[in-house]
Length: 255
Image (cartoon, rainbow, N blue to C red; front, side, top):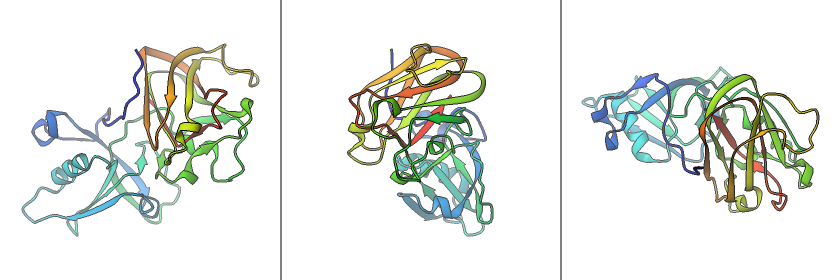
């Protein structure tokens, strides 16, 4: 059974909240990550709150992020007793390259294998910023210029991740582009997995099927494709239906 859903939980622990502190009695786990303040300040959703001296700062910030729904990352300023919430996706293993203004945040995204993986792909669209590396850089701020976008030719609407070693996983998450054209660029999407590289693009029938998203995506849809059982693979291929206008994907997670 394949699942397509919004992923809103995390897997491994940095900050662990008591059950009583979380809506619905669910255990929430958080990861610390260093990220440039300038980068997260470009988030499309930001909220700042000032806490009273009577409130427990970490507890309050965690719960507020969860209740907001759109929050993926939060930054506590202990000296000012403020907490800032961002919708930007920042993966726990994200590598910040601009450390002059780096801040220590908490992310609710899971540790995954896509971040920092090697990637090959079909011919990129002419917009320079829409490069394939955007899928594996571990950060996404819902700006369409930071997505990966292929040319429209049928043989170009694909990508392959190389995880560097055979790893075991069961979930792959993809985020569609942040506008209504997602229905034309994320349509009839298929994922396959394998343990050996392919010499050149000839389709991916030599790989095993992992799962698919047969429908048409909507704006910023988080598409979670889950294998019926865990698989072990090094390579992950993704391609859309020949009828899709192009392939455009903005973020990817593998866990």
